[in-house]
Each structure stands twice: as C-alpha cells, then as structure tokens.
Amino acid sequence: MLRAALAAVFLAAPAGAQTATVHSIWNGNGYQDNGTSWTIKVTFYSDGRADIAYTSLNCGGRLEFLGQDSATGAYSYREILTYGFGACIDKGKVVLVPAASGLDYLWYYPDRATVPGATGTLVQTH
Image (cartoon, rainbow, N blue to C red; front, side, top):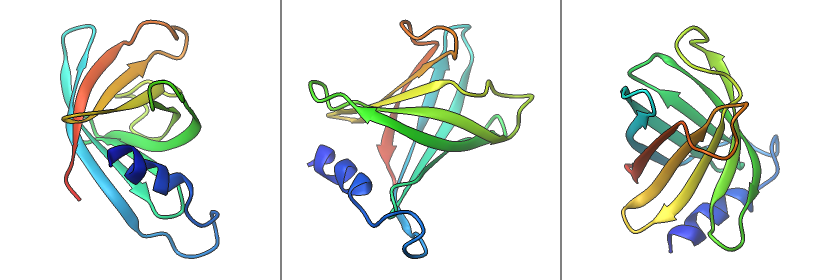
C-alpha cells in the first residue's frame, strides 16, 4: 500500500498542468554520522514534486527525483537547497525506502555515494 501511495505521486499530472496540492507530508528525525540529530519534513505534491525541510536546522529545498530501485522500492533524489546554505550541505543524495514503520531515510554526502552520512525514519503525518 505504501509503495502504491508513493508511486501515485510520480504518476500524477505533469508539472505545470495545474496548481499542485499537497499529496502527503512525512516527518521524522535524522541522525548524522557525527552524532548530531535534527528534524526532517518531506512534502510530496500532486504534480510529482517534493520538498525537504530540516526544520530544526532552518534549511531545506527541493528534491529532484533520480529514480526508483525496482528490487527494493527505494526512491532516490538529489537534494537542492534553496535556503539555509550555511546550516546544511547542498546536493546530497536522499534515498527513501518504504518500510513497515513508514519511510527509512538515508542521506549521502555529494562526494560519498556508497555509505550514508545520515539515517532516520519518517512517518506520514498528512
């Protein structure tokens, strides 16, 4: 069911066809490899766009869809910051994996694609 709900976001009307509405909102906590933690909010829109906000760090931006792994169902994104450049690292890779508890969150440094620099879990709140 969760995979179907996320897939519906990507099969929605093309960007610009209509004013996008919020499709779903996911919130949780991230835990970085240096021991810090912070809050995360991911918003999916009906036109397939997605935004990310690290609310406790006052930074965030948009998520550019890169693709889906057919074996795991994981969705990959490039994170493009639009605010809070001093608080967060731009152009990291975000991977969201459907899990029993919601979405597993994996964040990769732009120059280190094999080992996550941060992990977390997101639960749907809208």
